[in-house]
Length: 98
Length: 294
Image 1: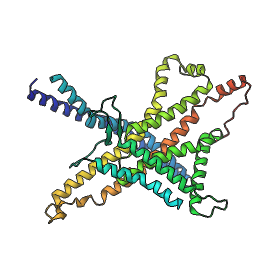
Image 2 (image 1 turned 120 degrees about the vertical axis):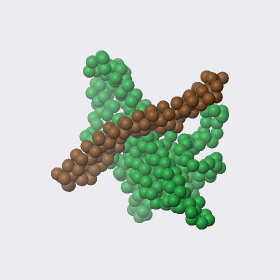
Image 3 (image 1 turned 45 degrees about the vertical axis):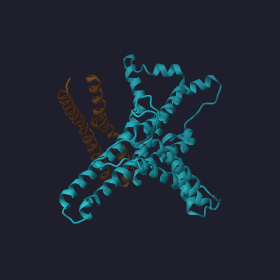
Image 4 (image 1 turned 30 degrees about the vertical axis):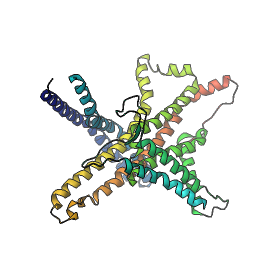
């Protein structure tokens, strides 16, 4: 494989990694909807029983932070694809050309 | 005199970390989103077998020493009358932690307050250390995974209380078909705890870095015509990153520390098979254990 082909392969690979990272972040939709629902219900609960405000708020924040997990998995995959994967793939390509 | 020594014990490790970071940071420009700096490695290319000491390890040990100093400072010179504010603060912390543990885990686990408080303080201060410009140890998956594995061992310890055979049978419930899923579920607990904490801190750091670099570029293009040194300074970076930092560094860091401690408590307290354990103890002629109501 000559140098031009190697550059082309690296370019295609980096583009696909970026595309994959973007696709992985679709996972952000789920927690967004879920946390929105949770906050809406918490607002309803506070409206019905204003005296429980502090309890409801702390439980809601706790639940929101746990519901965020799935989105964070997507984020971690995206970060790995952008910052970690290119290095190892480039090493593989270099080893192939040797 | 002892007080000054203890205050120095709190501050010096952090200062030492800052000095170490300044010495090791390479001069660079532009967006800098990198993992922890590596201070020492037996091999230049970090492979799986390389032994290396990274910034996150050093920082987490510095945080540990700092917290130890803080504890010694707060508990130095205790009196029965509780006249100084320091003692009131220490008593408040201890009371809150014991109440939290008792409410969430029940009376049997009342002795767990120090452990839970330690894990919460370590996590919170590790996240907050980025306020002085250091890399948060919690932004490194190795550190959070270490804590999660520690919690996993504790969970397993209590799950085995009901007898190894009962635990093994429990994996095949409700139907044997679920065994692989139950097994994955056991392993998923530490993985999800570690990744939740790590991902929150890391995403905050990445977003802060991106916003900072974007504002730098914007101020160079908009305010570059200013004379002299004013043109070089990223003036637009004043303000917005600080507001983001309040959410991403302070709120998110403390929140994740609380959630990590909360999940530790709930997972450990929920892992105990009370019926099986008491059945085993009856066989061994030992008194039964009751977890007093939460």
